[in-house]
Image (cartoon, rainbow, N blue to C red):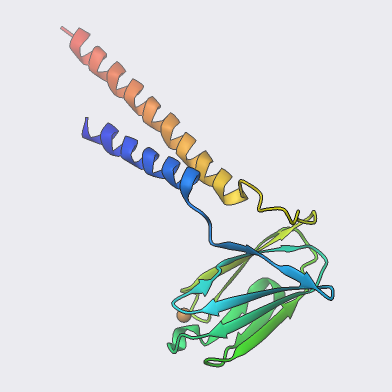
Length: 167
Ligand SMILES: [Cu+2]
């Protein structure tokens, strides 16, 4: 059963990812009422996911180290921001998210991506939450694959039984 084996491998990979991978997420630090995060632009955005609180100004400090023109612009469509990033300088991008949600940003060509995760409650300073929303979606995917894999196994078994019982 090659299909079942590859299905199992996929599920294992997803479970492994769910349990052990650390999302490259960073929580903004608030000083003087502004939530600040430094983002390095180098072959993408580091960190690519920034967690902030709703209703407080956000200042993302982009330090572009990547000379490729691909990353010379950063777009925040939800906040109507298109910002040019100078090479080897820090360029601030500021906005105040009023609604809880996940807001994507990208390079000018929509090739590299990041996201601002706007949360409702103030974050505890003692540590990151254990699981994030994308972990749940990943677990959901793994479970749905597991269920689909089971269903496929049952279906093929039923089919096989049916074929054998036919004289
Ligand atoms: Cu690009």
